[in-house]
Amino acid sequence: MKFFVDTAEIDQIKELNDLGMVDGVTTNPSLILKSGRDILEVTKEICSIVSGPVSAEVVALKADDMIAEGRKLAAIAPNIAVKVPLTWDGLKACKVLTGEGMMVNVTLCFSANQALLAAKAGATFISPFIGRLDDINIDGLDLIADIRTIYDNYGFETQILAASIRSANHMSECAKIGADVATAPAAVIKAMANHVLTDKGLEGFMKDWAKTGQKII
Ligand code: G3P
Image (tube, rainbow, N blue to C red; front, side, top):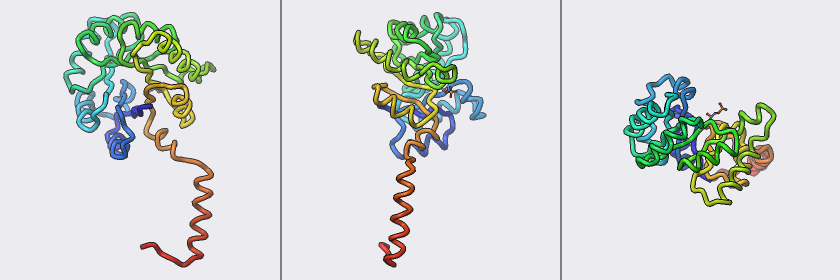
């Protein structure tokens, strides 16, 4: 499973990228707001750091306007994936932009039917939002599993990009289901390293090591 980092914070992207943990980046209008940066500038900077797909989201609601914005965003760098919402207009924009050779990430997906339509429209990525489904007492991971089944049934090449990931548990569950990509905040990716038994074991080793009176260096 590829790891994308869901942020527009340059420091976080650099730290994870240096460790080989970043296969791509996803942003959205809320993350751009949080960064306090200009969308075109920050997206260009991210693309100069990360070689994998960098999702930049359109904000128009009509297909023609989305297409114009998508072309402008895609001109930033060759690794831009234009992000469009899963609306009828977004699907129209997806079809046109992928037809022009751009990568398109169809976002705000909350049902298997929406994912099926995105695949038919030629989406490069479909972004089902796990956490926001969990928030309304619908199991978001079930949606990832359903889309995996449907795409595999028919050989759709659209990659499942699990999004709205809130916990390290979401990451491992997505990997078990077979999501192609998971995009998560940097804190969630770092939390994957944590285990209480690792902490406990390390504490025991450190205590015993101190008793040996030895040094390695
Ligand atoms: O990738 C989508 C993500 O940014 C949304 O996450 O936690 O706001 O639902 P969240």
